[in-house]
Image 1: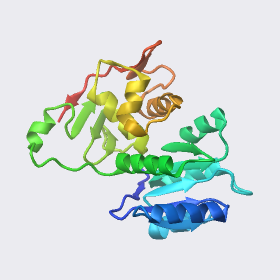
Image 2 (image 1 turned 90 degrees about the vertical axis):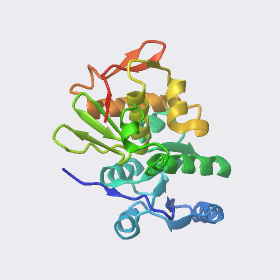
Image 3 (image 1 turned 60 degrees about the horizontal axis):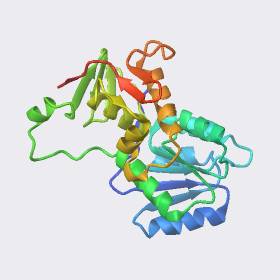
Image 4 (image 1 turned 30 degrees about the vertical axis):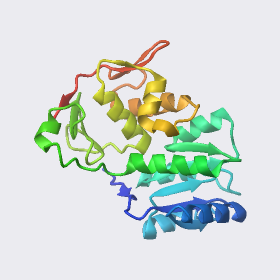
Amino acid sequence: MKLLRSCVTSAPHIAIVDDEIDITQLLANYLAGHGFRTTQLHSGRAVFPLMASDAPALVLLDLGLPGEDGFAIARQLREHWRCGLVILTGRGDTVDKVVGLEVGADDYVTKPFDLRELLARIKAVLRRIAPPEPSPDVPHAARANDLRGDTLRFDRWVLDTAARSLTDAHGREAPLTGGEFALLVAFASHPGRVLSRDFLLELTRGRDAGPFDRTIDVLVGRLRRKLEADADDPQLIKSVRGAGYIFVAPVKAG
């Protein structure tokens, strides 16, 4: 099975991919002032050599790159690298937002944007993809008996929250984006409970959550395609009309 290269490093490196030099310079200066290392790129094709040589922890990607399909670039990034991916674009149509999230973006920000909000969203994505800090006060064995422990088992899947991995019964990994991982942890930690979209949005994105609640619906759709034998007839994550979603699979810790 294809192995995805991790891009999370101790020194956050952000690639800014936009054909407008003024925007990349503005963002580079602002992010540098908040402790980030940045690389400015002005074409989508330029991001792939960077991923191979100095992979960033997160990519800010404009969709409107001249002569290039921004969605195709996003899809390639998601297929080959486990980095944060934030689409930053002037295309604010709801359909574009849904497609952007469908191809694997962790967030979607439209221009014009507020620098402080963008920074908050970048930090939120980086928190979701960063390895969790071990708790020195709680023994591993004790955590394993809690549904918030390191390993959660359901159906034919093993969700390792420490390694941030999802594997099937044969040990094959199913790659998850940061948003998919956070949502699956939320579901597996609350089995048998109806969870509203607002609750799930708060769990997965916290105070940085925005009003675009279709994010949860898109992420649920992506999880179903990865987890379910038939995504059109889901048996693990079921919709509850007017209420949200329920994770019906029994979950065991450890």
